[in-house]
Image 1 (cartoon, rainbow, N blue to C red):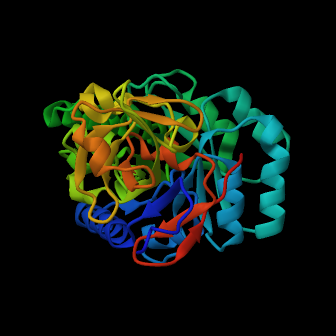
Image 2: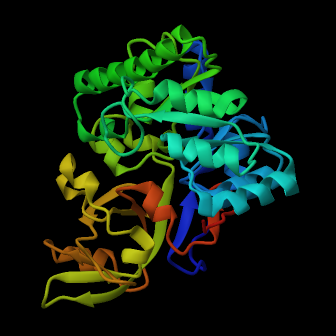
Length: 364
């Protein structure tokens, strides 16, 4: 791809790497005997969704009703909205139901929300979210309300889901395996309780990319959900979950200024282009807001965006020769710390490294 005339900042997606990452995860799940429900919250792209599922217009995960709406209209017919639903979103759910006729599964974790779903004559089935240790959403597998929530839902009860987002808290594979075990145990314990009470549990769903890859066992689980594996980022690389050559998403940026006296150069990728997330620095301290790389071969240049302003990224230059190697107007590609939030910037889509453009959608 010739980047010279491209206006920056913009997103570059290496289609070959993305496709290889997606194929590896599908093969991994097939070998473990579980269905893969890819999470599309990062890429928010119909084209990407089709690659992630291997061309099958079914079984996907979303985090917003906007994602559900666009992907249902594109023909995907089995969509899990994996964030807790609330009554102020019911009208949007109804519109998706009426306009697409596709299966949209909702998520909840309280008797009150189950009652609201039923009392408002919303026909969608729903999953009960179980907290497996992250303490973000869901109820414990030992929560006294579990059976009552399922009974309120009745025939609309779709199953159990949980998410070990706290697997991102460690770079030790042994610890990730422990979290994966907790995740599987939380989901299967809840399912066992419900079945013992005479309640059918069609789906038992777990997922985060690290736990799906490193779980010792997925016995009792019939579905996994994950998403960052499609493009990876420095956060995952720094924790040893992927190789540098697996990273498929970069930001093309341009050097727009030199301040030799201050020892910094400036690129046109700031907070809105890269995000302010520096979580990758926990295990990769020099990640900062992203690594600068050669635009053509993605060789790291030993420089990071150290500070972000709205549209400016400031790069500390320790070796003055960098000013000569990167004159104003030079384009670089930047590896993001957290691809999900980087992609969520003001971008309209992905320029494919192998040629072409995939539009993306935003909003809630």
